[in-house]
Structure formats: C-alpha cells, structure tokens
Image 1 (spheres, rainbow, N blue to C red):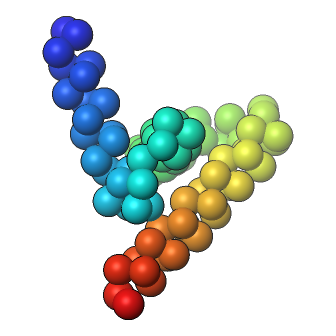
Image 2 (image 1 turned 135 degrees about the horizontal axis):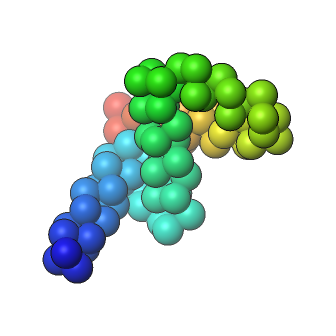
Length: 82
C-alpha cells in the first residue's frame, strides 16, 4: 500500500506540473481539492449544493481555488506558446 501511495502522489505531482507548470506541495493540495470538488459536483450535484449551503465560507474558498488554478493554467499555457 505504501508503494501505491507514493505512486499515486507521483501522479498528482505530474498532473499539477503539467497543469500549472510547477508542483509545489501547496499547489498539489489545491489541485487535489479542485479535482475532488469538481468530481463531486458533477457526480452528486445535490451533495455539492448541500455542502455549499452548509459551508458558505468553504464555497467561497473553493471558488477562489478554482479561479487561481484557472489563472495559473492560462499563464502556464501562454508561456508554453511563446
């Protein structure tokens, strides 16, 4: 199991790097939260809606994380295209 955890961490690390251009622990954490929230919102919208209403400050934080990831991704793609 420990080997799997390391392998899965490498997957998140590479995904974050490809998405944003770097993979710091902070960025990996944000990407992980973004991926999980997005999956939940698509697969169980009522659960996401309930969480959003139950934790409005959490909803604002995830919105901030999503916007940050979008901006970092756009910056990374722009740098690659130069």
